[in-house]
Image (spheres, one colour):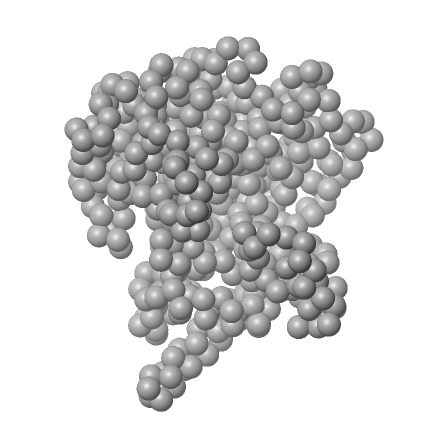
Amino acid sequence: MSEKQTLLQQRKAQALPRGTGTLCDWYVARAENATLWDAEGNSWIDFAGGIAVLNTGHRHPRVEQAIADQLTKFTHTAFQISPYESYVALAERINQRVPVAGAAKTAFFTTGAEAVENAVKIARAATRRHGIITFGNAFHGRTFMTLAMTGKVAPYKRDFGPMPPSVFHARYPSAVQGVSVEAALASLEDIFSQDIAAQDVAAIVLEPVQGEGGFHVVPEAFLLALRALADRHGILLIADEIQSGFARTGKLFAMDHYPVKADLITMAKSLAGGMPLSAVAGRAEVMDAPGPGGLGGTYAGNPLAIAAAHAVLDVIDEEQLCERAAGLGAQLTTFLQGQKARYAAITDVRGLGSMVAVEFDRASTAQAVQKMAMANGLLLLTCGAKGNVIRFLYPLTIPDGQFAEALEILSATLESCATRAEQETISA
Protein backbone atom coordinates (compact mmCIF):
# COMPACT_ATOMS: atom_id res chain seq x y z
CA MET A 1 0.00 0.00 0.00
CA SER A 2 1.35 3.42 -0.96
CA GLU A 3 1.98 6.15 1.60
CA LYS A 4 -1.00 8.12 0.22
CA GLN A 5 -3.34 5.14 0.54
CA THR A 6 -2.08 4.46 4.07
CA LEU A 7 -2.80 8.07 5.02
CA LEU A 8 -6.29 7.79 3.55
CA GLN A 9 -6.92 4.66 5.59
CA GLN A 10 -5.87 6.51 8.73
CA ARG A 11 -8.10 9.48 7.88
CA LYS A 12 -11.01 7.10 7.23
CA ALA A 13 -10.54 5.40 10.60
CA GLN A 14 -10.56 8.77 12.36
CA ALA A 15 -13.47 10.31 10.43
CA LEU A 16 -15.90 7.43 9.86
CA PRO A 17 -17.64 5.07 12.28
CA ARG A 18 -16.41 1.48 12.17
CA GLY A 19 -19.85 0.35 11.01
CA THR A 20 -19.08 1.73 7.56
CA GLY A 21 -16.81 -1.13 6.60
CA THR A 22 -15.05 -1.27 3.24
CA LEU A 23 -13.65 -4.19 1.26
CA CYS A 24 -10.71 -2.51 -0.46
CA ASP A 25 -7.75 -0.83 1.22
CA TRP A 26 -7.22 1.28 -1.90
CA TYR A 27 -9.23 4.28 -3.10
CA VAL A 28 -10.71 4.59 -6.55
CA ALA A 29 -9.68 7.65 -8.55
CA ARG A 30 -11.50 6.96 -11.81
CA ALA A 31 -13.45 4.27 -13.62
CA GLU A 32 -14.56 3.39 -17.13
CA ASN A 33 -16.81 0.53 -18.23
CA ALA A 34 -15.37 -2.52 -16.40
CA THR A 35 -12.13 -0.99 -15.07
CA LEU A 36 -11.25 0.82 -11.85
CA TRP A 37 -8.04 2.80 -11.24
CA ASP A 38 -6.53 4.20 -8.07
CA ALA A 39 -4.54 7.43 -7.85
CA GLU A 40 -1.27 5.56 -8.50
CA GLY A 41 -2.57 4.13 -11.77
CA ASN A 42 -3.12 0.58 -10.52
CA SER A 43 -6.13 -1.01 -12.20
CA TRP A 44 -8.67 -3.70 -11.42
CA ILE A 45 -11.23 -5.49 -13.54
CA ASP A 46 -14.52 -4.79 -11.81
CA PHE A 47 -16.56 -7.95 -11.24
CA ALA A 48 -18.42 -6.26 -8.36
CA GLY A 49 -20.24 -3.58 -10.33
CA GLY A 50 -20.90 -1.44 -7.29
CA ILE A 51 -22.96 -4.38 -5.95
CA ALA A 52 -25.00 -4.97 -9.12
CA VAL A 53 -25.50 -1.28 -9.91
CA LEU A 54 -23.43 -1.07 -13.09
CA ASN A 55 -24.93 -3.48 -15.62
CA THR A 56 -24.25 -0.78 -18.23
CA GLY A 57 -20.73 -0.19 -16.90
CA HIS A 58 -19.00 2.78 -15.32
CA ARG A 59 -19.69 6.07 -17.08
CA HIS A 60 -21.47 4.71 -20.12
CA PRO A 61 -21.38 7.55 -22.70
CA ARG A 62 -25.15 7.47 -23.17
CA VAL A 63 -25.73 7.74 -19.44
CA GLU A 64 -23.15 10.50 -19.04
CA GLN A 65 -24.72 12.50 -21.87
CA ALA A 66 -28.22 12.11 -20.47
CA ILE A 67 -27.11 13.43 -17.08
CA ALA A 68 -25.15 16.27 -18.67
CA ASP A 69 -28.16 17.31 -20.75
CA GLN A 70 -30.43 17.30 -17.69
CA LEU A 71 -27.89 19.37 -15.75
CA THR A 72 -28.48 22.24 -18.18
CA LYS A 73 -32.22 22.22 -17.35
CA PHE A 74 -32.82 21.57 -13.63
CA THR A 75 -31.45 19.24 -10.97
CA HIS A 76 -34.31 19.14 -8.47
CA THR A 77 -37.84 20.35 -7.89
CA ALA A 78 -39.36 17.47 -5.84
CA PHE A 79 -41.74 15.74 -8.23
CA GLN A 80 -44.70 16.05 -5.87
CA ILE A 81 -44.23 19.84 -5.94
CA SER A 82 -43.33 20.58 -9.56
CA PRO A 83 -43.62 17.46 -11.74
CA TYR A 84 -41.68 16.84 -14.92
CA GLU A 85 -42.45 14.85 -18.06
CA SER A 86 -39.38 12.61 -17.91
CA TYR A 87 -40.66 10.96 -14.70
CA VAL A 88 -43.99 10.18 -16.35
CA ALA A 89 -42.28 8.91 -19.50
CA LEU A 90 -40.02 6.56 -17.54
CA ALA A 91 -43.00 5.18 -15.63
CA GLU A 92 -44.72 4.55 -18.96
CA ARG A 93 -41.68 2.67 -20.29
CA ILE A 94 -41.47 0.47 -17.20
CA ASN A 95 -45.23 -0.14 -17.17
CA GLN A 96 -44.98 -1.54 -20.68
CA ARG A 97 -42.31 -4.07 -19.70
CA VAL A 98 -42.78 -5.02 -16.06
CA PRO A 99 -44.03 -8.63 -15.69
CA VAL A 100 -47.28 -8.09 -13.83
CA ALA A 101 -50.78 -9.10 -14.92
CA GLY A 102 -52.85 -6.37 -16.62
CA ALA A 103 -52.31 -2.64 -16.56
CA ALA A 104 -49.36 -1.46 -14.47
CA LYS A 105 -48.36 1.71 -12.67
CA THR A 106 -44.96 2.79 -11.29
CA ALA A 107 -43.74 5.11 -8.54
CA PHE A 108 -40.11 6.16 -8.12
CA PHE A 109 -38.03 6.46 -4.98
CA THR A 110 -34.32 6.77 -4.16
CA THR A 111 -32.95 3.56 -2.63
CA GLY A 112 -33.75 -0.13 -2.78
CA ALA A 113 -34.80 -0.15 0.86
CA GLU A 114 -37.22 2.70 0.13
CA ALA A 115 -38.73 0.68 -2.71
CA VAL A 116 -39.27 -2.32 -0.44
CA GLU A 117 -40.70 -0.18 2.37
CA ASN A 118 -43.15 1.42 -0.05
CA ALA A 119 -44.10 -1.94 -1.55
CA VAL A 120 -45.07 -3.02 1.98
CA LYS A 121 -47.07 0.17 2.45
CA ILE A 122 -48.88 -0.37 -0.84
CA ALA A 123 -49.61 -4.02 -0.02
CA ARG A 124 -50.98 -3.15 3.41
CA ALA A 125 -53.14 -0.38 1.98
CA ALA A 126 -54.48 -2.66 -0.76
CA THR A 127 -55.26 -5.64 1.49
CA ARG A 128 -56.00 -3.92 4.81
CA ARG A 129 -53.80 -6.58 6.40
CA HIS A 130 -50.55 -6.26 8.33
CA GLY A 131 -48.50 -9.47 8.01
CA ILE A 132 -45.46 -9.79 5.77
CA ILE A 133 -43.73 -13.08 4.95
CA THR A 134 -40.19 -13.18 3.58
CA PHE A 135 -37.56 -15.93 3.43
CA GLY A 136 -34.48 -17.12 5.23
CA ASN A 137 -31.20 -15.67 3.89
CA ALA A 138 -33.11 -12.90 2.12
CA PHE A 139 -31.77 -9.37 1.96
CA HIS A 140 -34.20 -6.49 1.53
CA GLY A 141 -32.39 -3.45 2.98
CA ARG A 142 -30.96 -1.71 6.02
CA THR A 143 -33.90 0.36 7.31
CA PHE A 144 -35.75 -1.11 10.26
CA MET A 145 -38.65 -2.57 8.27
CA THR A 146 -36.37 -4.04 5.65
CA LEU A 147 -34.00 -5.30 8.34
CA ALA A 148 -36.94 -7.16 9.86
CA MET A 149 -37.59 -8.64 6.43
CA THR A 150 -33.94 -9.58 5.90
CA GLY A 151 -33.23 -13.20 6.81
CA LYS A 152 -29.74 -12.81 8.25
CA VAL A 153 -28.67 -11.47 11.65
CA ALA A 154 -24.97 -10.67 11.32
CA PRO A 155 -23.93 -8.07 10.40
CA TYR A 156 -27.28 -6.53 9.47
CA LYS A 157 -29.58 -6.90 12.52
CA ARG A 158 -27.02 -7.50 15.24
CA ASP A 159 -26.79 -4.73 17.87
CA PHE A 160 -29.88 -2.84 16.66
CA GLY A 161 -32.53 -4.07 19.07
CA PRO A 162 -36.09 -5.21 18.40
CA MET A 163 -37.28 -5.30 14.82
CA PRO A 164 -40.74 -4.17 13.64
CA PRO A 165 -43.44 -6.80 14.26
CA SER A 166 -45.64 -8.81 11.86
CA VAL A 167 -42.73 -10.08 9.76
CA PHE A 168 -42.21 -13.84 9.43
CA HIS A 169 -39.62 -15.92 7.61
CA ALA A 170 -40.32 -19.02 5.55
CA ARG A 171 -37.65 -21.34 4.13
CA TYR A 172 -36.31 -20.57 0.65
CA PRO A 173 -36.18 -23.65 -1.61
CA SER A 174 -32.60 -24.61 -2.45
CA ALA A 175 -31.36 -28.06 -3.37
CA VAL A 176 -27.79 -27.25 -2.32
CA GLN A 177 -29.05 -26.23 1.13
CA GLY A 178 -31.25 -29.28 1.39
CA VAL A 179 -34.54 -27.37 1.28
CA SER A 180 -36.98 -28.93 -1.15
CA VAL A 181 -39.91 -27.16 -2.76
CA GLU A 182 -42.19 -29.22 -0.55
CA ALA A 183 -40.29 -28.26 2.60
CA ALA A 184 -40.39 -24.58 1.68
CA LEU A 185 -44.15 -24.74 1.09
CA ALA A 186 -44.59 -26.60 4.36
CA SER A 187 -42.77 -23.79 6.18
CA LEU A 188 -45.38 -21.35 4.89
CA GLU A 189 -48.17 -23.53 6.21
CA ASP A 190 -46.33 -23.66 9.55
CA ILE A 191 -46.34 -19.87 9.67
CA PHE A 192 -50.09 -19.83 8.98
CA SER A 193 -50.75 -22.33 11.76
CA GLN A 194 -48.21 -21.14 14.34
CA ASP A 195 -47.55 -17.42 13.83
CA ILE A 196 -50.17 -15.54 11.81
CA ALA A 197 -53.41 -16.48 10.10
CA ALA A 198 -53.26 -16.40 6.33
CA GLN A 199 -56.18 -13.95 6.33
CA ASP A 200 -53.95 -11.43 8.13
CA VAL A 201 -51.03 -11.64 5.69
CA ALA A 202 -50.73 -8.73 3.26
CA ALA A 203 -47.84 -9.96 1.14
CA ILE A 204 -45.21 -12.58 0.53
CA VAL A 205 -41.93 -10.99 -0.58
CA LEU A 206 -39.46 -13.12 -2.54
CA GLU A 207 -36.22 -12.59 -4.44
CA PRO A 208 -36.46 -14.65 -7.68
CA VAL A 209 -32.70 -15.00 -7.32
CA GLN A 210 -31.44 -14.39 -3.80
CA GLY A 211 -28.72 -11.76 -3.81
CA GLU A 212 -26.81 -11.53 -0.54
CA GLY A 213 -28.20 -14.96 0.31
CA GLY A 214 -25.98 -16.66 -2.25
CA PHE A 215 -27.57 -16.41 -5.73
CA HIS A 216 -30.05 -19.22 -5.17
CA VAL A 217 -32.50 -19.36 -8.09
CA VAL A 218 -36.12 -20.01 -7.19
CA PRO A 219 -37.48 -23.21 -8.78
CA GLU A 220 -40.38 -22.69 -11.18
CA ALA A 221 -42.45 -25.27 -9.31
CA PHE A 222 -42.16 -23.22 -6.13
CA LEU A 223 -43.18 -19.98 -7.80
CA LEU A 224 -46.22 -21.65 -9.36
CA ALA A 225 -47.25 -23.08 -6.00
CA LEU A 226 -46.55 -19.76 -4.27
CA ARG A 227 -48.74 -17.89 -6.75
CA ALA A 228 -51.55 -20.39 -6.21
CA LEU A 229 -51.19 -20.17 -2.44
CA ALA A 230 -51.22 -16.37 -2.52
CA ASP A 231 -54.32 -16.31 -4.71
CA ARG A 232 -56.09 -18.83 -2.48
CA HIS A 233 -55.60 -16.64 0.59
CA GLY A 234 -55.87 -13.19 -1.02
CA ILE A 235 -52.19 -12.45 -0.39
CA LEU A 236 -50.14 -10.23 -2.70
CA LEU A 237 -46.91 -11.57 -4.20
CA ILE A 238 -44.02 -9.10 -4.28
CA ALA A 239 -40.89 -9.86 -6.31
CA ASP A 240 -37.78 -8.09 -5.03
CA GLU A 241 -35.77 -7.53 -8.23
CA ILE A 242 -33.43 -4.93 -6.82
CA GLN A 243 -30.31 -7.02 -7.55
CA SER A 244 -31.66 -9.23 -10.33
CA GLY A 245 -33.27 -6.60 -12.55
CA PHE A 246 -32.27 -4.78 -15.71
CA ALA A 247 -30.77 -7.54 -17.85
CA ARG A 248 -28.59 -9.21 -15.20
CA THR A 249 -30.29 -12.61 -15.54
CA GLY A 250 -30.61 -12.55 -19.33
CA LYS A 251 -34.07 -10.98 -19.21
CA LEU A 252 -35.04 -7.45 -18.24
CA PHE A 253 -36.43 -8.92 -15.01
CA ALA A 254 -35.74 -12.33 -13.50
CA MET A 255 -39.51 -12.89 -13.28
CA ASP A 256 -39.55 -12.85 -17.09
CA HIS A 257 -38.06 -16.35 -16.94
CA TYR A 258 -41.20 -17.70 -15.25
CA PRO A 259 -44.87 -18.18 -16.23
CA VAL A 260 -45.79 -16.41 -12.99
CA LYS A 261 -46.72 -12.76 -12.55
CA ALA A 262 -46.06 -10.80 -9.38
CA ASP A 263 -48.49 -8.22 -8.04
CA LEU A 264 -45.69 -5.77 -7.19
CA ILE A 265 -42.03 -5.62 -8.23
CA THR A 266 -39.31 -3.60 -6.53
CA MET A 267 -36.29 -2.39 -8.47
CA ALA A 268 -33.23 -0.20 -7.94
CA LYS A 269 -29.44 -0.75 -8.42
CA SER A 270 -28.86 -0.97 -12.20
CA LEU A 271 -32.04 0.97 -13.02
CA ALA A 272 -30.11 4.24 -13.35
CA GLY A 273 -26.53 3.26 -14.12
CA GLY A 274 -25.01 4.45 -10.85
CA MET A 275 -27.46 7.23 -10.00
CA PRO A 276 -29.67 6.73 -6.92
CA LEU A 277 -33.09 5.66 -8.17
CA SER A 278 -35.54 2.93 -7.19
CA ALA A 279 -39.09 2.04 -8.09
CA VAL A 280 -42.14 0.01 -7.25
CA ALA A 281 -44.23 -1.18 -10.17
CA GLY A 282 -47.34 -3.27 -9.98
CA ARG A 283 -50.91 -3.93 -10.90
CA ALA A 284 -52.66 -0.60 -11.34
CA GLU A 285 -55.47 -1.33 -8.88
CA VAL A 286 -52.95 -2.36 -6.21
CA MET A 287 -50.67 0.62 -6.82
CA ASP A 288 -53.65 2.96 -6.51
CA ALA A 289 -54.49 1.76 -2.98
CA PRO A 290 -52.58 4.49 -1.05
CA GLY A 291 -54.27 7.88 -1.10
CA PRO A 292 -52.75 11.07 -2.54
CA GLY A 293 -49.62 11.99 -0.58
CA GLY A 294 -49.18 8.45 0.72
CA LEU A 295 -46.23 7.83 -1.59
CA GLY A 296 -43.27 10.08 -2.33
CA GLY A 297 -40.09 11.52 -0.92
CA THR A 298 -38.03 14.67 -1.30
CA TYR A 299 -35.53 13.10 -3.69
CA ALA A 300 -37.83 10.40 -5.08
CA GLY A 301 -37.47 10.30 -8.86
CA ASN A 302 -34.66 12.85 -8.97
CA PRO A 303 -34.51 14.29 -12.52
CA LEU A 304 -30.82 13.48 -13.04
CA ALA A 305 -31.43 9.85 -12.03
CA ILE A 306 -34.57 9.67 -14.19
CA ALA A 307 -32.56 10.89 -17.20
CA ALA A 308 -29.90 8.27 -16.50
CA ALA A 309 -32.55 5.53 -16.31
CA HIS A 310 -33.95 6.47 -19.71
CA ALA A 311 -30.43 6.09 -21.11
CA VAL A 312 -29.97 2.75 -19.34
CA LEU A 313 -33.12 1.32 -20.95
CA ASP A 314 -31.90 2.58 -24.34
CA VAL A 315 -28.51 0.93 -23.86
CA ILE A 316 -30.03 -2.38 -22.73
CA ASP A 317 -32.10 -2.51 -25.91
CA GLU A 318 -29.61 -1.09 -28.40
CA GLU A 319 -26.64 -3.12 -27.16
CA GLN A 320 -28.79 -6.24 -26.60
CA LEU A 321 -27.59 -6.60 -23.03
CA CYS A 322 -30.14 -9.27 -22.14
CA GLU A 323 -28.71 -11.50 -24.85
CA ARG A 324 -25.18 -10.54 -23.84
CA ALA A 325 -25.91 -11.40 -20.21
CA ALA A 326 -27.09 -14.85 -21.27
CA GLY A 327 -23.98 -15.39 -23.41
CA LEU A 328 -21.44 -14.17 -20.85
CA GLY A 329 -23.19 -16.10 -18.11
CA ALA A 330 -23.08 -19.32 -20.12
CA GLN A 331 -19.37 -18.78 -20.77
CA LEU A 332 -18.67 -18.13 -17.09
CA THR A 333 -20.74 -21.10 -15.94
CA THR A 334 -18.91 -23.44 -18.32
CA PHE A 335 -15.59 -22.12 -17.03
CA LEU A 336 -16.64 -22.56 -13.39
CA GLN A 337 -17.96 -26.06 -13.97
CA GLY A 338 -14.55 -26.94 -15.39
CA GLN A 339 -12.89 -25.53 -12.29
CA LYS A 340 -15.30 -27.46 -10.08
CA ALA A 341 -14.15 -30.67 -11.72
CA ARG A 342 -10.56 -29.77 -10.78
CA TYR A 343 -10.93 -28.48 -7.24
CA ALA A 344 -12.75 -30.24 -4.42
CA ALA A 345 -13.11 -26.93 -2.57
CA ILE A 346 -15.74 -25.85 -5.12
CA THR A 347 -19.03 -27.38 -4.05
CA ASP A 348 -21.54 -25.73 -6.38
CA VAL A 349 -21.93 -23.49 -9.42
CA ARG A 350 -25.31 -21.86 -10.01
CA GLY A 351 -27.04 -18.84 -11.42
CA LEU A 352 -29.32 -17.38 -14.04
CA GLY A 353 -27.91 -15.48 -17.00
CA SER A 354 -25.03 -13.39 -15.70
CA MET A 355 -26.17 -13.64 -12.09
CA VAL A 356 -23.70 -16.45 -11.41
CA ALA A 357 -22.07 -17.70 -8.22
CA VAL A 358 -19.55 -20.32 -7.16
CA GLU A 359 -19.77 -21.87 -3.70
CA PHE A 360 -16.75 -23.10 -1.73
CA ASP A 361 -16.42 -25.57 1.11
CA ARG A 362 -15.82 -22.82 3.66
CA ALA A 363 -15.80 -19.03 4.02
CA SER A 364 -12.01 -18.90 4.45
CA THR A 365 -11.56 -20.44 0.98
CA ALA A 366 -13.83 -17.87 -0.65
CA GLN A 367 -12.06 -15.07 1.19
CA ALA A 368 -8.64 -16.36 0.12
CA VAL A 369 -9.77 -16.45 -3.51
CA GLN A 370 -11.22 -12.95 -3.21
CA LYS A 371 -8.04 -11.56 -1.62
CA MET A 372 -5.67 -13.17 -4.11
CA ALA A 373 -7.82 -12.17 -7.07
CA MET A 374 -7.73 -8.55 -5.91
CA ALA A 375 -3.95 -8.74 -5.63
CA ASN A 376 -3.93 -9.97 -9.24
CA GLY A 377 -6.19 -7.20 -10.50
CA LEU A 378 -9.70 -8.69 -10.27
CA LEU A 379 -12.34 -7.33 -7.87
CA LEU A 380 -14.79 -9.96 -6.56
CA LEU A 381 -17.56 -10.01 -3.96
CA THR A 382 -18.58 -12.75 -1.54
CA CYS A 383 -22.08 -13.53 -0.35
CA GLY A 384 -24.12 -16.40 1.10
CA ALA A 385 -25.39 -17.26 4.55
CA LYS A 386 -21.93 -18.54 5.51
CA GLY A 387 -19.91 -16.11 3.41
CA ASN A 388 -18.54 -19.00 1.35
CA VAL A 389 -19.91 -17.91 -2.04
CA ILE A 390 -18.32 -15.67 -4.66
CA ARG A 391 -20.77 -13.84 -6.93
CA PHE A 392 -20.04 -12.28 -10.28
CA LEU A 393 -21.53 -8.87 -11.08
CA TYR A 394 -19.40 -7.61 -13.96
CA PRO A 395 -20.77 -4.91 -16.27
CA LEU A 396 -22.63 -6.55 -19.14
CA THR A 397 -20.81 -4.09 -21.40
CA ILE A 398 -17.40 -5.57 -20.56
CA PRO A 399 -15.25 -6.14 -23.68
CA ASP A 400 -14.77 -9.78 -24.65
CA GLY A 401 -10.99 -9.55 -24.28
CA GLN A 402 -11.22 -8.14 -20.78
CA PHE A 403 -13.75 -10.80 -19.80
CA ALA A 404 -11.34 -13.48 -21.00
CA GLU A 405 -8.51 -11.80 -19.08
CA ALA A 406 -10.62 -11.87 -15.91
CA LEU A 407 -11.25 -15.60 -16.30
CA GLU A 408 -7.50 -16.15 -16.75
CA ILE A 409 -6.85 -14.27 -13.50
CA LEU A 410 -9.53 -16.31 -11.75
CA SER A 411 -8.10 -19.57 -13.09
CA ALA A 412 -4.62 -18.70 -11.87
CA THR A 413 -6.04 -17.56 -8.53
CA LEU A 414 -7.92 -20.81 -7.97
CA GLU A 415 -4.81 -22.83 -8.82
CA SER A 416 -2.64 -20.79 -6.45
CA CYS A 417 -5.18 -21.07 -3.64
CA ALA A 418 -5.46 -24.82 -4.15
CA THR A 419 -1.68 -25.21 -4.10
CA ARG A 420 -1.39 -23.12 -0.94
CA ALA A 421 -4.13 -25.16 0.74
CA GLU A 422 -2.33 -28.40 -0.14
CA GLN A 423 0.96 -27.06 1.27
CA GLU A 424 -0.75 -25.99 4.50
CA THR A 425 -2.34 -29.44 4.82
CA ILE A 426 1.04 -31.12 4.35
CA SER A 427 2.66 -28.78 6.87
CA ALA A 428 -0.05 -29.47 9.39
